Image 1 (cartoon, rainbow, N blue to C red):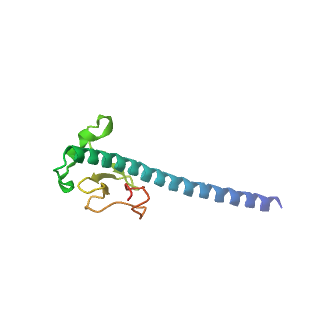
Image 2: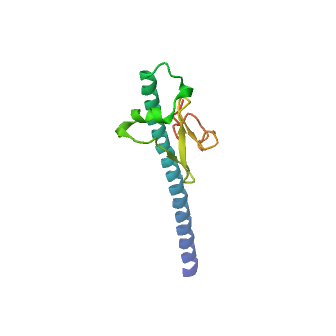
Image 3: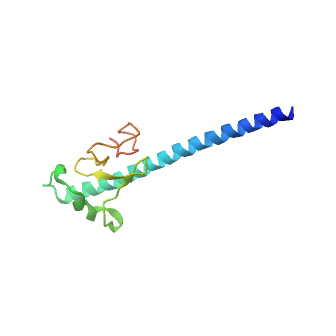
Length: 123
């Protein structure tokens, strides 16, 4: 009887540990997406302020260097976003709203939704 009870308790503990590891991974993925969304909103605000000061400039002609003075906290470089694999990704600023660029001029959004404000500004 004791061996069976011990086996049941060990199985329950292993199930709880496995569940907590899965939840922890999902929470850290969500946190990366939330941070990316906040960074994109910051760049989007800088983009709108730049366009308000320079209404003759087309969105497609904007460069990251032009937006740096409009970023908060006296930033000296354009912020980057960390992907789910730990890769640093740039932000494409010549579109409105700005998007995370995966390096091949493709949008990076693992959430598969352009309106959830994770990995994007939302629409």
